[in-house]
Length: 141
Ligand code: CMP
Image (tube, rainbow, N blue to C red; front, side, top):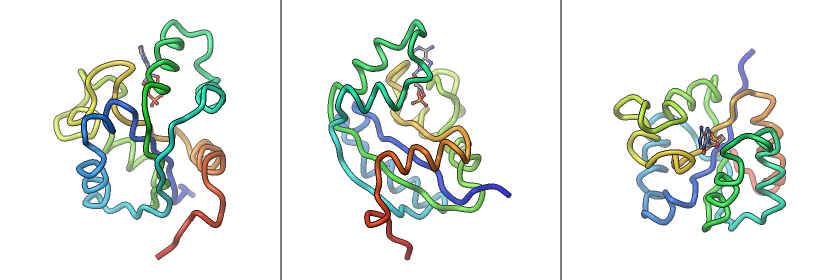
């Protein structure tokens, strides 16, 4: 059975451009409940932990530099089949090839500056949510 949560990051370029409010509105309009939310300026260690699967790839250094360039907004989103539904809302990793109306098309500017992260599996949604949020920081309403 598909999971009910996914994890997202509004990345530094999107925060700097003032897109936090418009992005959260689109997430709400698409039927997701925001059950946890916070601003953080991620440490190098947190970024390296989070993106360890990409360590060694050609774009890794640029990705780490980008993610440490400013504050981000972290959130846990709830909806039936959350991971797949949110990946549809996000669009392709590269904003240049993302469909019209998707969040990365609207709020991303390229690679690695694609504006948003979304979990790629139910298992990672749980791992990523647990890394950044305690149970006390989650609100079911
Ligand atoms: P995200 O969904 O956070 O997962 C890994 C990130 O690496 C991705 O979004 C992009 O920000 C970045 N990324 C993925 N592929 C490339 C690429 N080919 N060149 C530069 N950055 C990339």
